[in-house]
Image (cartoon, rainbow, N blue to C red):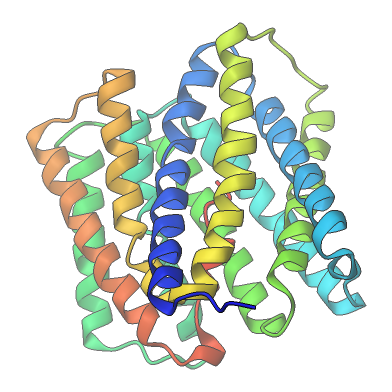
Length: 308
């Protein structure tokens, strides 16, 4: 049997990392496009995560059926993390009815700061550099939503709810399931998200507005390409290049999402908003670098991101 060349394996790892980053960046602008085309926010999320969970389960049945059976702790924690982030994902998608895709994307780039704050609750030191990162992020938010654009505050609060749900999901898994198989955890996180979102949809009375063909195409892309394939590519990439290296691509995802919003949705930003977004991205890059230096036992599980 011939062994794979380490250089070619690493090259493939980076290729998959870039591919997953690119498809992840499509979620927010395509989601905005689907909502503008008539899709109900809760409905599209229920269909998206239900389809993604089904595809992942079928893939696991075919390739690694033993990973379908978590222990009780893994089942409970992963499911709870999914429920929390499912509610956060609903908040984020509802924000797209009130905010431009580019603005929501830049606000969500504050997520690494929230993760660092949560890790501080478990003993991770909050240094003066952390305060500098936080100050840059808050100044960026002020310029983005304040004098630069007068952005809808209700939409901003919905994005913050999405960030909180995402942060709680990541830290719950990191704290309580560090040794569990990533595929198993991800499947039950997806199932938890789908249950929470579908339960909320039922509580709302299953509202439905018939989308056009474009809406259905968008649903398939974000479910199959941006969720199922994106996570598969991310798993494989992290196995080869590591989560710390992969995390360096997070700001690239944000920039790509903003670019797609400009190109395909016709969105624009005022100069002060661009400055504010730039400060948020700088703050996020500094936070990601810090996360990459955290000891492995407390490191952010990067493979659980992008469940917006």
